[in-house]
Length: 334
Ligand code: NDP
Image 1 (tube, helix red, strand yellow):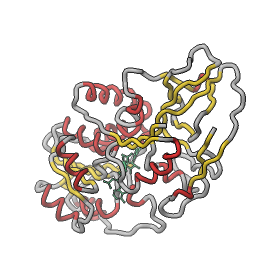
Image 2 (cartoon, rainbow, N blue to C red; image 1 turned 180 degrees about the vertical axis):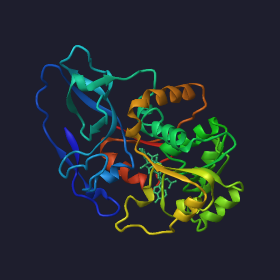
Image 3 (tube, rainbow, N blue to C red; image 1 turned 180 degrees about the horizontal axis):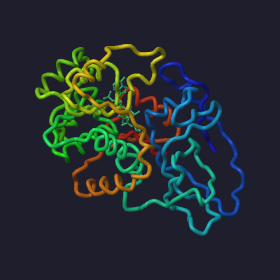
Image 4 (cartoon, rainbow, N blue to C red; image 1 turned 90 degrees about the vertical axis):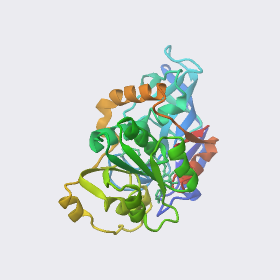
């Protein structure tokens, strides 16, 4: 089988040479084991953090070992009565991450079948980790109230699109920030955002936010950090909530980023700013999943994904996240 390994820890933006493809032999299948082959992989921004040798909420990738990411697989061969060739499966681990390998062997007890009535890639997007991140981040930390203004950075991505639509379900005015005219148009035309700001070539985000949010910002759902967030934070209202979800603009920084210090403004305006990792909500996933499924079924939540085809496209897909190649969830179909 083919595997894609972490070849070296990147400094700054990863490149193709961060990865290395090798061919290895799998051992023979034993009793109660299942041979699976990946069907869909998710590539996610947080994986950049795992390429650094630093202590975090999830251990770093090891150099010379396969990269791993969210995935849905199909059973190829089974020595367990509960699984049969063709079954669609995911891992049951608290972090259900598949190695980047064209096939792998697992004990049957570490696999679960997934519902065939839902498109499998949804488990990696709107009904999976990114959807739950939008749900709990916005509702539990952002606490949106009808009539409030929500601003979302990274709005055209997997998390942002869902967060924005949930904001609309809660009766808020939702403004997205994304890169490029096409993405901005997609947010307002297809995803029900009230307005959207194109940050590319825009050197005064603060002025754009002021113009589009005349009543200020009550909830800022931050996926990107950096200068975009500096521009939004200047317009926070009294008792605003800042949901620190992601900081993708800073993930490849080689130096500690410097910028305005917003603390005096946060203090005088009684702003709450809270970071979170979605794993904090593991005991409540069923609750989020239930609402997300319901909203998808009733058409309140729309979905889009960008699909790249081929196992060998995994590195390119991952690198594409940092160049904004995706609209909605970035998926690799093997
Ligand atoms: P996306 O689908 O949003 O993909 C990343 C997007 O980020 C790109 O499409 C690009 O869109 C934008 N981007 C890339 N580089 C920059 C930059 N330098 N400045 C501004 N925007 C940039 O990814 P996800 O929806 O999966 O994740 C969104 C954020 O949420 C990430 O920061 C991620 O780490 C975080 N996250 C946090 C979780 C948590 O538990 N806290 C869980 C899941 C995700 P554009 O074309 O608009 O620039």
